[in-house]
Length: 397
Image (cartoon, rainbow, N blue to C red; front, side, top):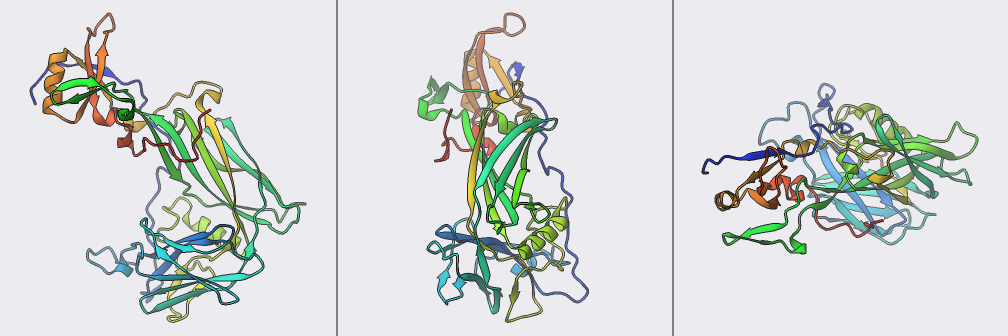
């Protein structure tokens, strides 16, 4: 590319973003001596209150399995060749299909909460079955609140079961937030010329979603009533890009049996700070599913049947006590480049990695008037992983 003299403006963005679970030490499972059987990992639950349930299956890595070209059972990959069914105690079966995201989708009607259900899996010649489990019915989420603390914004859930029949709770959530790129491009370079960008060509505002990655459980067994008040489910770190404009969180509440709670507590203690929840785990963790064809084979998974309650919360950046100053490392090196228009046209013609921004009036001191442009990563918000289209549920205040 032709060497040009450039006037450079630093983007008004910070350098660091504090993310939860950003530094996690990798953890490799150690089997007991002589234990070379694959370890099946079963992730999901029977969603009795909806018309579909989802499961993901994988094999955990075994010791010495990092050799390239190893079999499926040795590489920790997602299993896509299984037969998966939900079966009621009365004998009705619901069969899964494999979704595009690698999860098994099991269509079924809203299930009878007075029946028990189990999960069946076949992978090759290996057959796995869970115990029959009862359907736990979730009470409503009575409150989903937030406040500011010295680490950012905390989000808290409260619930109560007047019947006293729940006792054990688990939560999952999905965060969705609106953010924008550092620079708004108002023109398009096309056929050697600049033209005004149409509204449907704007790429300044995006929407991104992230699922929860930690195990969130609590119980009310030591309390006088079956209620959980102000349990923290999420923390938005100070300066997080999630609060650039508007943030939303959907919290799902899943009731559990005492057996399920014990399983999740053990899994949480084993995985906390060690890596992904469903990565390699100590082989002694046991759930309620086992291999009926190969009893020596081990399984990580707890099959549960439950109805789920949900609640959504929105937070806008202007609701915080002080203006939320975003520090996003993804945009930390973004530069606004300013040059005479003819020089910018040469750059745009020779390097499609740059996108025009628009006329720049100058700052009256060091930077004369000219035309501005920037690297596409700093202009097109989709490069950061978001979508230009808001989710169906999204609302603006």
